[in-house]
Length: 99
Image (cartoon, rainbow, N blue to C red; front, side, top):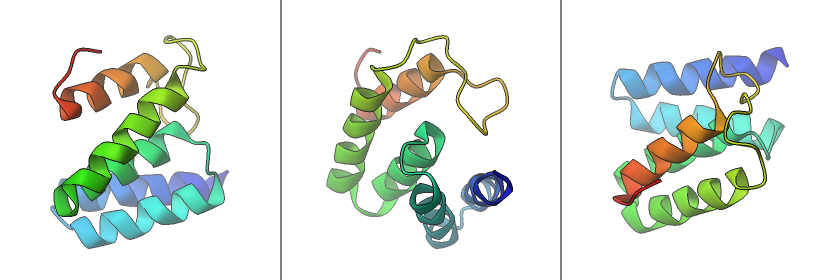
């Protein structure tokens, strides 16, 4: 709901401003509220990649694996017009492989 959306917006906003620690905290809070939310998991993985690359890569792999259970064109909850396929593409690019 609203709390999840707020944490996701905070995670994105902090990331855009280069505030990795605050972005990580917001992404963790979003994951706590809704552990299966792909955007929350992606944001956590992306920010973790900056501070703990190996752990970030593992988290990105988990995002890709989890996304495979959804149709690529499915919308991601709390992510305006963002599809599962777009998250997979972004995760794969960060991992240096083809989607």
